[in-house]
Image 1 (tube, rainbow, N blue to C red):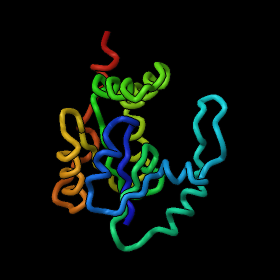
Image 2 (cartoon, rainbow, N blue to C red; image 1 turned 90 degrees about the horizontal axis):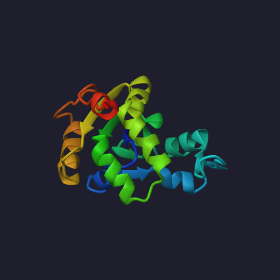
Image 3 (cartoon, one colour; image 1 turned 60 degrees about the vertical axis):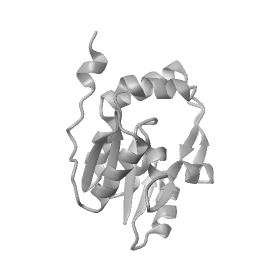
Length: 168
């Protein structure tokens, strides 16, 4: 079973994935290791080869739980856990990472507009949404493990950054 741990860059995916007792596959690593179409000339980043990724992930499918970690992991799973973060906290994290002003704005808008959540809801049979704001990676990992074990469900629609983000 492959479960996506997804969300806007900076929401805590990698930190949380490192605390889970499951096999974790970093989707971005697969892109860097050959599942790409080269560099996007406008954005300067690698362009993922979605068909090659799907084939590589299909080869890994097995009975154990595998967590697919990455901001577009939801394209390869029937179940997604979407991590969310208040855009004000997200801005600080992306600044710390050295993102350009343009890239920060793009990611903040994506978070405020629920872009990844909407994509996950459109493509997955089940979606859970976890607000990571003010929570440690260990707290979020505990919630994710409870979701995977079907001890709790956190359906989409709990988080809304739109008013705060776009308010004057």
